[in-house]
Image (cartoon, rainbow, N blue to C red; front, side, top):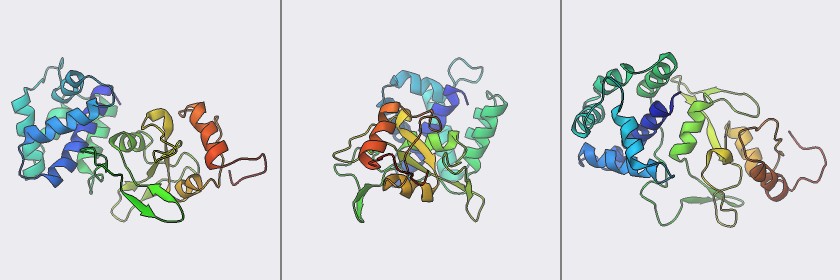
Length: 232
């Protein structure tokens, strides 16, 4: 998937969530908040916007035009936004765009949108951060929702794929891992729990996308690996 389409779908995913929380705001506000959130990771705002409006393609739109398509998509379930994006897609991009717009259920809104003061936590044996960032959702999609450990790909009753994103160096207090592609893996719920509770160690060969620093952190701090056999 090209960076332009990946960035555009990430913005639109956030737009969908923001619109659910603020349905009466104009589409320009949804788009502005989503663009700023994606840009906050270090991408220039102008670049994020350029990707969204198809700059340097034969079908470039103005801000007003993209906002009109977004509003029609959110409020009237119009296909015009999808059809416009497909005009400038290659085959692989077209497949991803079609999957995005035909998903039966929208991806849950990242809990850290609008920068809440406190991360939502649920008390279990330990405090576990419940956060599904836009970047994590993108990585799950890039992995086609297939677990990087057991290779399981879960399909819900309506055919929607389901997976979870695990931050190898956790985001929570005391760990303070980064929300970065080199710190995120796509896993099924079962393997996610095993990783969270240190039941399995991580191997750099299998998790080539993860920075060695974070794998070492998991094995020594989370897993406390001592050389004896583990589940994986």
